[in-house]
Image 1 (spheres, one colour):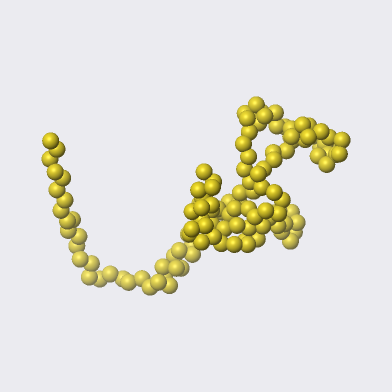
Image 2: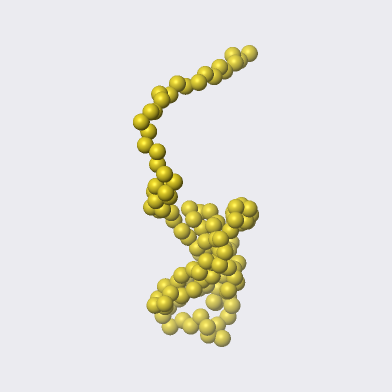
Length: 132
């Protein structure tokens, strides 16, 4: 038979000269916290054999060539489950936070994401469950 566990309070000293931080100060501190943002364009699954067949196209390979077979094109392209124009997931610290639309920057040299909706807590939970 196990001896019952006994709990007791831990005495903490009273802090009488505490500096009370205002809510504004707390927000200013939070605003400086760095978070990682990622955009998930889509997902796919591969059989390892097919993954090993992927290769980088030579400079003269035209992936838009109508004479190129689907099988040949699949050596160079990973097809994702997201359609062009579909919203993409925006993640903060690996958690779905919002959905967005892929855009090009004004310079046209890099991608950006325009936020189209910030998910409420219920939507975030559902979106996170879908990811698993």
